[in-house]
View 1 (tube, rainbow, N blue to C red):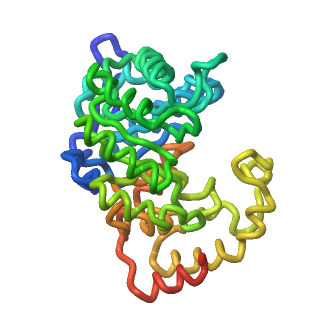
View 2 (cartoon, rainbow, N blue to C red; view 1 turned 90 degrees about the vertical axis):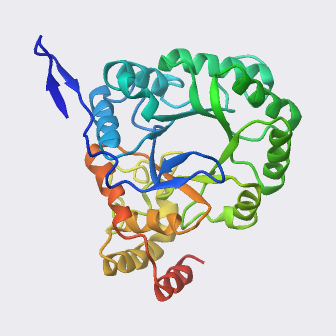
Length: 337
């Protein structure tokens, strides 16, 4: 909602009923409740994008009860620009709502030249978060993740860096992303011994990418951790975008690094069959794909990206039908197995 102040400048006032229809799930065994659908700012919020559109998406998200916003130091392009753009919007629209937001950022991929700008050393993690906080104009983030395993840095050092970040007051909670079951279990023990609130694992998970079912979800449940699922729509494959071919202006049509035409073509029969089930459920394929993830008790929230407010609203409608009967699940499993 926009209101005019005394000078006639339009400012943002959040909808009063923003928490009325959103579903909130507990993050593992922590005290944190997160919206079932969260907003990821991996795409569409960099310097190459329209800031006004990004601002509209963020306002829409909060008005829908989406309190959880997910960043990483390298989101853009260029790297860092998504955080910087958010900092501009935060100052304009969301500063008064800071305590209602659960803001995440991550570090683990290459961010600056030299030996200290990548992976998982204590120096990199602490330096990266300092830079992220400056870009966003925040005193702290609600959760800080190590973005990917570091094969060369001892896990003790990486987890120790996360622990010190919490002790310094720069993050309230910590998480990890893209870790396998064994390293997740080791990380959980290290952080428990350090008495650090480790609450979430962020993992790629969709109908077409089910690796987390091979041990990770069980590990998270046994360790009292929640899971945030990213790339739930497989870069647009699990939507209605490719049902009738490959549009020229799509990611697959441009053979992006994230999705190519060959991958879409090899999955088109599955996509069409899944769409038939979604239609019978009264949903779009994208909505069913999100609901299918949320049926798992370990899934705290599903991260969606959005190029427009309308697209975000459509994704949130997945929450209108989260129940699957046995026959539906059997048919879906037969298609995607």
